[in-house]
Length: 396
Image (cartoon, rainbow, N blue to C red; front, side):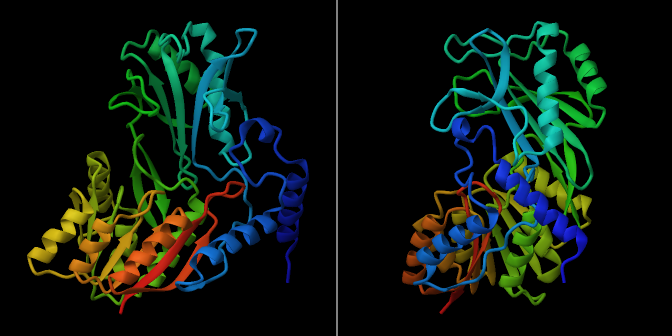
């Protein structure tokens, strides 16, 4: 039975679908603009089904109730229009031409508003925006991260130089506009690179991090932390991953590509012990802090390559019961899967952000004596063509 609230939500979604996005023709970031959300889900289901049907059963896709303003991380670049006025927005797909955007239907609205305020403050503080062609200018990017659970907000000002004139007054002016901001960081990126963030940082206000709650656990998020951008769907994703792992409380678990330890901590009550392995040193520090913050004692984190870690376990005669893996869009590697087989993992939960590379990897898993049993698509990024899929893989 539909409640009034559900009917109103549905009507609101249908209204937004009819209006569409005013930037869609220029931006190109949302491939499914002009298509109803229901049709988007059907299309994504069809794509995963076609790619994975030869390997396993594909369950129905897990969609969102309200597929708008879901991104808790918003990034903006700057440029000038033909009249010389400063604009902020995102690069047009496949180019370095900035599309001016004040509010995006998939981005957190408070974060968008903060970026607009930053842009409006620049002229009065005589802060010059970075020019890619000449290499001159101070401000390159602004990154805003907001916790939907705690309300904490981080603003990262990416500059070309550590010298930031009138930074204290600029911070005061921004806080006056947005007292919800809990920390402001200056990140210095002086390299000619497409990477947004540099390695050096100065905390201008607050603690230099924010905290967010996910599946009942508190996570510390720094400017460079990898953290899923859609918290509503992330809860569904991780709960389904834990379910597919089939944990009984007796297992030795590896969380490969563990980041700041989200899956490790969420899985910890259901298994004997968890080892989280991550290449990024800063992420490992965050993961260790997160385990302490949540008083979890059966998790250990290691900085290094997960493939090498498993090879060493195999040499030491150790085995694993469960492996969680969450590789980048390029998928896993044969070396990783070889090392996973060497350590005799009984079950694998593969969290994929690209069903094409997942299908390729499942073929190699098959050669190594593993069968995919079930796949569950999760719509982490409504309106875009990205598809997240969880796959349960079992040793024959």
